[in-house]
Image (cartoon, rainbow, N blue to C red; front, top):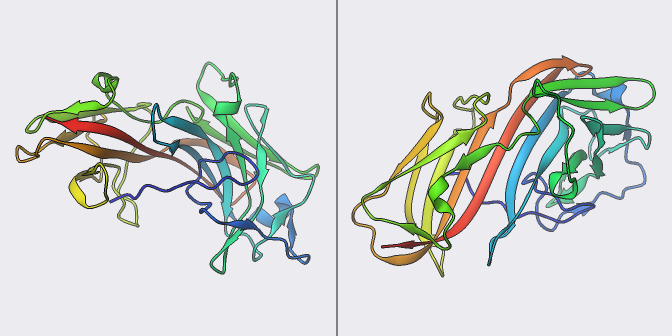
Length: 266
């Protein structure tokens, strides 16, 4: 079962589960400064993510794109000052290395879409992530990266959401260009969880490791669910098609979706 991750607030409002609460920026004076030439053997991860920062009241969502690297040749490094990153020409913000419990998360570039009124998008939906440092350039083109990724259901606009025991909830995933496969860590492509409203004991859960071909996630609610106020958790993950990759050894595109909401079982 995918767990809800609470978000840290570091240099920007960030919706990345990779940066844990309580993390602090690495400030060792001998941190290695990475240039793009140092990352040519690394894998560039481009992640679209939606995570809830405040699930009380109306619910506040932050969504955006993060660019990070796996396989950097240094412990707790930083980027050289002239390394810049953009998404379709929009400047991304550097989040420095974060140290927690003796481990160090590598630095990342983030674009918080809640802070951007509009994202310039090509008609083809081929979104461009570009990093440069005056010497080298990394480029990755991903299909519909800047579009909303996740699960939705039209009839969930009421608050709290009304759930009927014995019924089946149907969620649709968008965009249709995303694809799903069972990943090595065993995490499902979509998961739905119910917990007690004022506590944490597990009430009900349902997951699918690969969504159906029509990109639907069906949740059969058991008839034994008792009338109660509950906290529902809806989560999902997908692969975003990478159309071109220039500079690093490889590029990977992912989406991560996580949203709790209050519900009443009747």
